[in-house]
Length: 107
Image 1 (cartoon, rainbow, N blue to C red):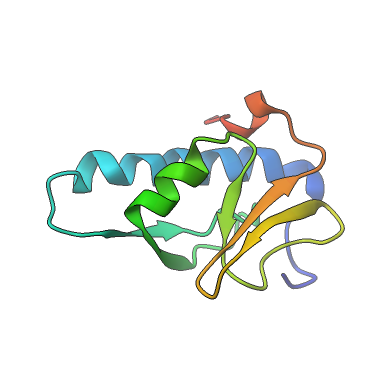
Image 2: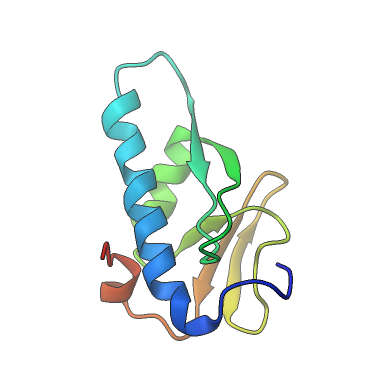
C-alpha cells in the first residue's frame, strides 16, 4: 500500500462498500459455469479498484467472517491490521480497530 492510501478513519466505510459490492457477485454469477470470482480488492483504500480473482468457495469462506477482508498481496497494512492468511493470489486481513458492524457497513 503506498503512502497515498486513504487515512485509517476512511477504511471502515471503504471496506464495507467494497465487501457489499463483492457480495453481490455471487448473486449475479451463481448460475454461471465458473469456479472463480473477479472481485474488487477490499484493502480499504477508496482509490484502489484493482481486481483479484479468487476461488468461489475460498471467498465464500472468507466472507463468513465479517472482520476478514480479502486484499491483493502488498495491499495489507501492518500498522493497522493482522494477516490471517497469505496466498499467492490474495491475503486475508483483519483490521485491529474495526467492529463487525463497521465491517458490514454499506453507507
